[in-house]
Length: 197
Image 1 (spheres, rainbow, N blue to C red):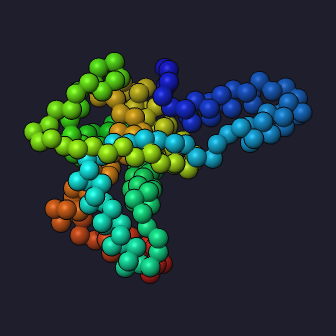
Image 2: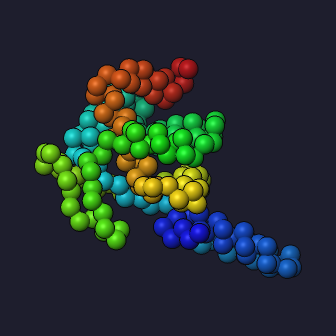
């Protein structure tokens, strides 16, 4: 199956194929050296969030930074949520169960898509959206892209991409936090940053 949008995943597959076809030690060293020079250590992603979610997240990050005395911005929050997601994913790898859980937690404004281009936002309110670009460590990006590739191979009904997963994680976390459903999140993040746990 073709996984066109999974650039880190595809480059890893290419590297494995190249290593398998390299016959001599010199070819293998040359390929490895070339890869280390051309491969980026971070993957750039762009996500879209409702401005209200972004603002609430920024305030939460500011509160965490004030309490812990450690720099903690929105990018840091994204990383914490991704790492937590990947830890849970590793504990019991069941792509379909995780996929269903993500769909159940999806609190993003509905978007009608056609031919992979956004046509129209459908929402009961005029939700304002903000686009954020951020770099994700290649190792984390690869793990997310492998999960997405596994979902694509399973032919799930509503395909997800890395950006969708990250948007779902953020929107769900902030919405639950606003409703008081993530009571320990603030304390646990502060304890993690300060090493108190």
